[in-house]
Amino acid sequence: MMSVLRQVCKNAEINCKVLLQTKYLSRLQHQCLSLNYSTKPKTGILMLNMGGPENLDGVQDFLQRLFLDRDLMSLPAQNQLGPLIAKRRTPRIQEQYSKIGGGSPIKHWTSIQGQRMVELLDRISPQTAPHKYYVGFRYAPPLAEDSIEEMENDGIERAIAFTQYPQYTCSTTGSSLNGIYKYYAQRDAPTNMLWSVIDRWPTHPGLVEAVADNIKDALQQFSPDVQSDVVILFSAHSLPLKVVERGDTYPSEVAATVQRVMEYLNFSHPYRLVWQSKVGPLTWLAPQTDDAIRGLVTRGRKNLLLVPIAFTSDHIETLYEMDMEYIEELGTEVGANIKRSKSLNDSSTFIEALADVVKSHLVSGKCVSTQLSLRCPSCININCKNMREFFQSYQPLLEESLKEPDPLKRRASQLS
Image 1 (spheres, rainbow, N blue to C red):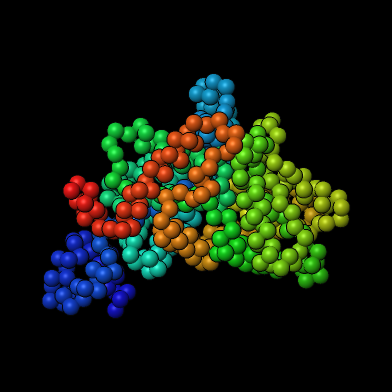
Image 2: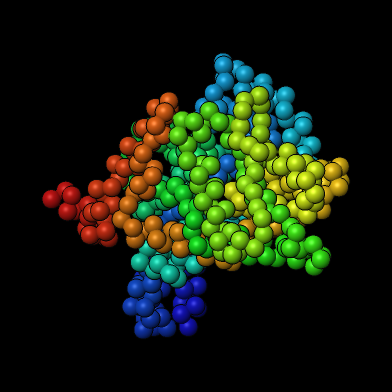
């Protein structure tokens, strides 16, 4: 009966209270209202990620936004050079996307994760329901700024910027959060939404369990006689050393995830953390994934398991770089037996983790984490300072909302 009730209330195109005035539903009025289901979402979760082009026509725009992002990289004459680099790289990147189906699946997987997450949240956190997810990409539609506008139009009360990068770096999560700050800095009208941030969750037990389960499954791809000889290579997107030297926490947080996963697996196999996707002439984190594969093979370790440890769904780095460049091409070249564990995608354990991360944040009473409140010791980006001040400014409002959840009563109290 309760599931039917939820569906009736959730899908109704007129106010739930009006429906409940009918003789058939009147006896259920109290139950329906206590579930807080209406046509208007109360809590909006903006799922932040880099994004990816859905088709080949979107590749150049995606690259152009990326090369114009000063939070990600700094180029001389960036407004002019960025579009030129994007145009030059477009044909090669289009070719890569054509080999994985003609576009990135990241929006597909983010939408599945988001929908299942909010369905869980409606059950486990009814006091903050209804929940609605919004996809907020940095470089491809749906862009975060467009989704924020949708959230404003939906009348969201509590807005959560939820990074889909479990490990924080200024180059990804930091850039997305700076983008939210800049959206409001350039906007005349104030927001009625109460913002807070989930900026990292590298050691969440559900994340650890989901990754470990996929590793266990992937090990079964090896024949029984070599399973004990497998070396696990946790592969994460690399980062320029100059970013790390400013104090970025990304390498330590990725390592923390790896450590927890191996603890969960009782250190069943030897392992290493390696880094992929280096671009340009700068020095990046090492060893690079392809160099590590070559080095291990020369030392007689040919049974290798690649584990995407900093990606929460399939995209070009897993489907093309890992599966094609490393496993097919490099594996054939050096005579290695390389497999890959599945990406998290629609893992029920992982999606339960997403919901738990959000629920824990909702009851924490904090707008930002302790770590986000601290800038990198050698930070050179004023937007990082402004972004932190922007989100921290909501702390008094959040504390008021926890004392008085009703926004109308809260506003009346503020005006009195």
